[in-house]
Amino acid sequence: MAATGGKLNSVREDRTLTQNLLQTQGFWKYPRDSLFSAPDSLRRIIDLSPESYSTISRMSRKDEPNDKYHMVAVIFFILGMGTLLPWNFFITAIPYFQFRLNPEDPAGNYSDLHVNETSAENIHSSGDAFNFNNWLTLLAQLPLLLCTLLNSFLYQCIPERVRIVGSMVSILFLFIVTAVLVTIEMSAQSFFDITMATVWFINAFCAILQGSLFGLLALFPQKYSSMLLSGQGMAGMFAAVAMLLSMSSGADHRTTALGYFITPCVGTFISITCYLLLYRLEFAQFYLSKSNSQVSKNYEVETNTELLNKEINGDPGTEKKAVLLLKDGEACVAVEEKQHVSICAVLKKIWIMALTLVIGFTVTLSVFPAITANVRSNTENESWAKFFNPVCCFLLFNIMDWVGRSITSYTLWPGPDCKYLPLLACCRIIFIPLFMLCNIPNHNYLTVIFSNDAWFIIFMILFSMSSGYCISLPMCLAPKKVLPHESEVTGAIMTFFLALGLSLGAGLSFLLKALL
Ligand SMILES: O=c1[nH]cnc2c1ncn2[C@@H]1O[C@H](CO)[C@@H](O)[C@H]1O
Image 1 (cartoon, rainbow, N blue to C red):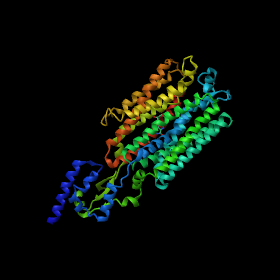
Image 2: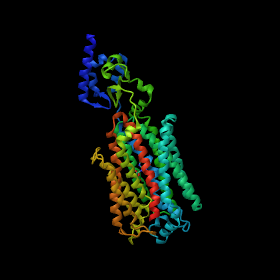
Image 3: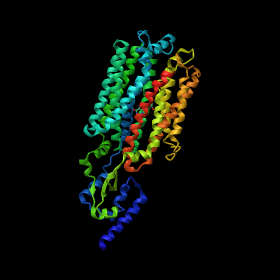
Image 4: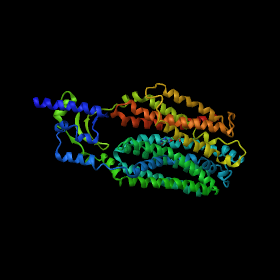
C-alpha cells in the first residue's frame, strides 16, 4: 500500500513538471530528450520492456529523418497546385471557350477577342447564349460539393494511394481530351456539351484528390498543410501566366489554345511523379507509416494500466488508458480516451466561422469569374485592351487573393471571439453591384457607371484581397474554437462549408447574369 502511494506521488510530480513544459492535445508531452532524463520515476511506473524502450530511444533520437532540401514541403506545394489547376485553367481560358462557342466567327483569332468590337459583341449575343461562364462555374463547384461528401465514405473502402493516383491520372486524361478538342472542328452545341462533361468529371476527381490530400496531411506537422494551401493559391497565378505567355506568342488561336492546355497536362504529370516520389523519401515514410497500424504498434507501448489509470481516471474502470508513443518525433505520455465527438456540438462552436466562410465564397464566386470575365477595357490602345482582362481580372485576382490569404499568417483580426465576423463578410456584397456597373458590353437592364479601367482595377484589388482574407480567417480560427480531439471533424465540416459556399456562389451568378 505504501509502495503504491509512493508511485502515485511520483506520477503527480512528473505530471506537474510536464504540464509546465507543454500541455497540448491531451498529451503530456516531453521534449524528446527530457523523456530520457526527467521522468525516471514515471518510467518506473510505465511497465516498459527493454525492447520497447530501445525502439523508442532509437526512433526518437537517431532515426527521425530530416526533410532534406525541403523536398517534402516542395512536393506538397506542387500537389496543392495540382488540386486547383483544373479550376483555374478552365476559368482563365473563358475567352477561348467563348470564341469556340461563337459560331459566326469560327476562323477568327481569339487573341483579338478584346480588340475586335464586332467579335466581342458576337460573343455576347451568340456565345453567351450558352451562359458559358455561369455553367462553367456551377458545373465545376457542384461536383466539388458532392464528391467532398462522397470522399467521406470512399476513404473507408478505397485505399488513399488508389484515390490520389487514380484521380490525378483521370485529371491528366481529361486535360489531354481538352487539348485534343482544340484541334477538332465541331458544332458549338457539341463543343459546349463535351466541355461541360469534361468540367464536371475533372472537378469531381479534383474534389476526391483534395479531400484525400487533406486526410494525408493530418499525419504531417502543420507546416505541410500551409505549403499545400500556398500551392493552391499559386495555381491561379500559374494559369494566368500561362495564358499571357500563350497570348503574347503571337500564334493563331488554335496553337495558342493548344499550348495553353498542354501546360496543365505537364503540371498534372509532375504532380503524379511528385506524389509517387513522396513514398520514397525517408522523411515522408516516417510520417506516412503512422497510418499503418502494424508499424505504429512498434512505437506504442501500453503502460502498467491498473496503476496509472487509477491516477488519471480518479476511479478505475473508465475508458481512459495511458500509452507511451511517438508524436511528431517526440516521445509522449498520452492519455488515450475514447472520446465521442458530436458533430452538432462542434457545429455549435464553429457556426460563426462556417457562416463567414460560406458568405466569403458565395460573394466571390457570384461575380468571379462569371461577371468579371466580361468586363472590357474602354481604351483605344489595342495591346492594353487585348491583355486587360487576363491581367486585371485573372492575374490580379490570383495575386491579391494570395496576399489576402497570407495576411492571416501575421494577424487574425478581429479574433476568434468576434461575433460579427459574418457581418464583416457581408460588407463584401457591395462588390457585386460595383462589378455589375463596370464596362460590360450589352447590358440589358443596367448601365455602365464605372467605365474607366482604373475603377475595375481598384475594385478587383479590394475584392480579391478581402476574398483571400475572408476565406483564410475562418479556416484558421475554427480549430481554435474546438477541443483538440474535435479538430479532425472541424476540418471536415469546414471543407464541406467551403464547397457549399462555392456552389451557392456559382448558383447566384446565374441570377446576377440575368440582372445585367
Ligand atoms: O476546390 C477549391 N478549393 C479551395 N478553394 C477553391 C476551390 N475552387 C476555387 N477555390 C477558390 O475560389 C476562389 C476563386 O477562384 C479562389 O480563392 C480559389 O482559391
